[in-house]
Length: 315
Image 1: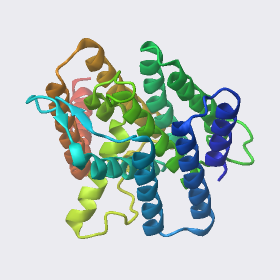
Image 2: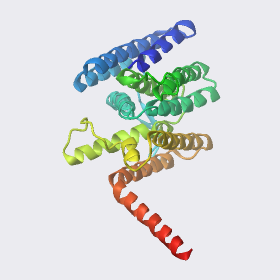
Image 3: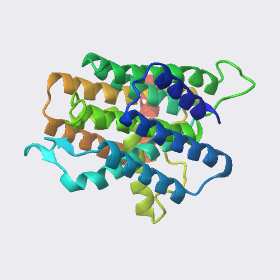
Image 4: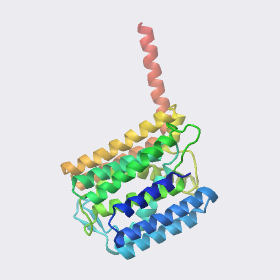
């Protein structure tokens, strides 16, 4: 369980050698230091989720109160004019940070998946930052990807087959926090407003939709939304007959497609309200597909079997 620790060390080394150390950077490094420590302790001793949530909320408050990294502007997502959250920005920022951290935590279910999804997210952000000329944040995204690639190789057993490296909660919390930190900086007017807020939903669409869909299903069953189960997309893919590598490729391709659509919508100027409505539509499709996946698979198998019988009778 040293993948997250190795990523943390890589980031510390990068900022120590090449980074601009200002107040914002110090707050970010302080936050990921705490998260990595708590995550490593959780990997070793299984820390209560209540303690983890409290620390995540506390770091969100520190982030907002010291360097004003908060969600205050949502753009024209409803088609009624720009939305400014005002005082609501504080609780929504806390919700976004805690949600992003735990969305990346939940997606870490099979070898290579967290690393693959993270490469998609930070690759998309890196492209956006570099294309807009924000080279410091673009380079940070590239450094994260460079640190993730050897981890993915060891996680998948491509090298060092006798021993595997896992990301653990230390890594998933670090990745989730860094992703939402960069996304806030890319969308809010007081930083680098190079990205419309609605595009953020598409860049992190898969972990976000998977977390939301699973939690809704747990609540509808009367279970705790934090109770572990085997109803995530990667579990369903494997039970449907895909092997772990096929599952990894299918999910990462899906995540890349969603992110690419968001970037295309950003670059072509598709109205924000249309992009938001499409995202909600895709989420409901995703939710109902997971809710009725076995009926859908049974129907598809019957259709294939029927076509196969018809083909055999004709020949």
